Image 1 (cartoon, rainbow, N blue to C red):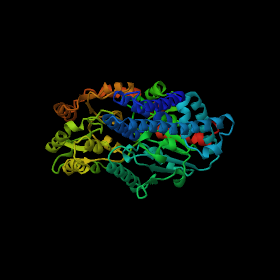
Image 2 (tube, helix red, strand yellow):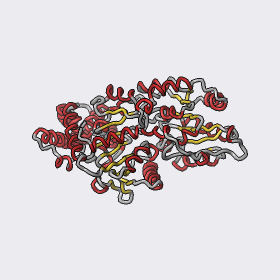
Image 3 (cartoon, rainbow, N blue to C red):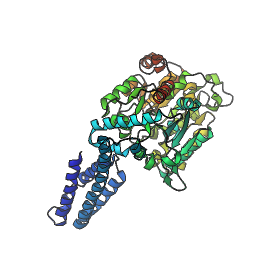
Image 4 (tube, helix red, strand yellow):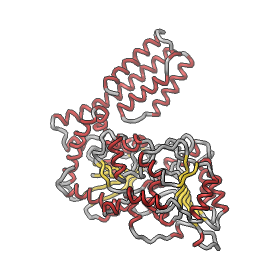
Length: 548
């Protein structure tokens, strides 16, 4: 879609409205689905967001009007669509011309950057990718020059919940530097029920506060409004951990970030599944100065699928996995419960990690709805041989309620409490999980990122499959080296536990180790932790003279 097409659609909507009003066209024969789809495409072109709320309401109203055969009301609604598109379009065109004109006349300087947001660059990207890259590079260079004059650097990590926290070691390195001020900013992620969204937000703030970390909420729950970046202190460099910007609102949306901020993206998971557009080609990816990716395969995937290729992608290794390469004392008693009177050395420790995308869920990986009762009963009935930790995806509760697996959030929480009440099980729902991986014996899962991350534990895992699952090229390679059963095949799950875990017949170990060595062992490849690499990369661009 381009500007000319937008203008033509606005005109067509108005003409269609007039023809329906005058009876020249039959309202009952109009393809309402197509009208609404085009509306969504236009709004998304102008604003880079799906506008599901507007589109859903428009679809509902049009179908109602069509059923009642109300020509006048339909015509008025179509005119309102045209006016809405016109409003969004004029605004987007203003942002585009504003930054392009500034660039062309030499006034795209620090003063301009200090008073504008990334929405300007969004509109350039929508219209001209090559020009977008040129102007983006110019903006990034101005920000780098400003930063290089500073004696103290401000770094912020931005996230939606503690479960996706992946930068523990990197945060510590920034915090240990006397010349760097570092903090964490959290914002609500608008997927789930209203209760689950605000609960997750509150738990996230509490998690970091309880650990003595500097955390700020970007949303004021009492005033029910988002705070400005100016009011909480704009960072120089902002680390994003989640690329799905359309689930954030207002100042939490990267498109509304200050243009003076250098955005850096570190994936919160190892990119695995088949929706490559969401993994490598969202607007949020385009607005980042740098993306620090997990492996050479993922850099190649960015080159293949992103509109700007891998021009802003740097292979660093996977920061979250740095903890596997460092010695640390782990108090296993806080992680695992063993039934009284049972020999701990004879107990196998198993993680059950269900993904949220059950039934019609977006990614289509989840199988929790098929086996959640049987998994609990197995753990309950094998307390003398197994210890369990259930680590559900943070969005599993809201998906279970929306799909009718549980009648309410409380019923879901009651289910988790049943696990916690077992003498051989814990529930783990937030924060880092590396210690859990290290001390476990196996994992049963359909959680997407864990499928790669658990390879760093060098333990067997059972992947619960489903027809809707899709994989990128990297995911296809990983899938081939895992134990697999259909997500509803509980007998197959039991067989994995008995043979591979308890009897330790791990026949696929060598295959997994070979894949790990060739693709994921970034420390041996680079002779550096990912956090060290990224820290020095940022430090060199801050204190150095070279601009890239």
